[in-house]
Amino acid sequence: MAVPDFQSLMLPMLEFAADGAEHSMKETRDALATKLGLSDSELEERLPSGRQTTFANRVAWAKVYLTQAGVLESPKRGKFFISERGRKLLSEKPPRIGIKDLERFKEFQEFRQASNKNRTEKVTHTDEADSPSTTPEETLEQAYQQLRDEVANELLHLIKGNSPEFFEKLVVNLIVAMGYGGSVKEAGKATRKTGDEGIDGVIKEDRLGLDAIYLQAKRWEAVVGRPEIQKFVGALHGQRAKKGVFITTSRFSKEASDYVGQIDPKVVLIDGSDLVQLMIDHGVGVSSAAVYEVRKVDTDFFIEE
Image 1 (cartoon, one colour):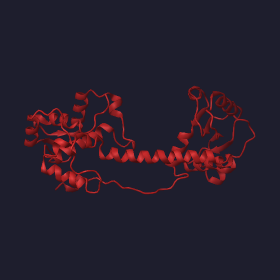
Image 2 (cartoon, one colour; image 1 turned 90 degrees about the vertical axis):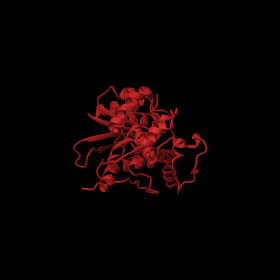
Image 3 (cartoon, helix red, strand yellow; image 1 turned 90 degrees about the horizontal axis):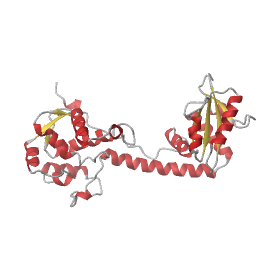
Image 4 (cartoon, one colour; image 1 turned 60 degrees about the vertical axis):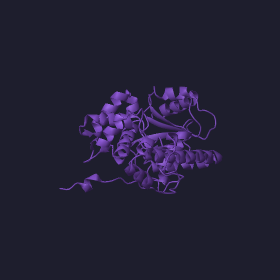
């Protein structure tokens, strides 16, 4: 099964707390994961940023909403227990607990109104389907990923519309931005045609030049197959080279990808999709449009000595 949305976790969490004991978030996650039968791969699934697992994020927000509604009480950091209001809600034997069910409580209404103050969505939901199924972090990261995908598509379109010489310059700038090749000037010299078929250039792996990386760059539309990679590997053997990078604006066939996993020297394949993602990550051909800093409450600040 997929990881349940945070609203679907509210009832299981409240049921887990029904024993009246004080529980930590870790033991709650463990108990809910077992109850829901989540697999290791589902538990390891992460938000797009990779900073937190999807399951941990959704459990945390289920707890936030239940606490804001007063059905759970959280007297200290990372701990909670069920309240009398929570026991009463459970006694009604609801088949599910969601935002709509919590809106009966004044404290929760005030919490929602404050949260929605700067949003365009309705403050009061008339139907459960209108309620969000994603946590705030998921919503933010999904929007970020959508914007990133749009930038990536535009980058690839622009690269394909430029000359092979521009593509060579782009590769140089990316390699240097990633920490290889020394300076742009040094890398530019190193990536001039070597005269050896199958190799477009050689760059230093580090600023001291302790090792070399051989390059092949193809501004292609067609799929790059195994024969092209074999030709490149043959050229590497001719240079007694141990490392190579093959970059293309298109993509590699499965046979090509499988082949590089079975050979020595080490060859890294960078297709068009990987190329533009690396450009975004290392600030090549892109600029920052806006920066949003997300803050969270420092609960340690409120602990009295």
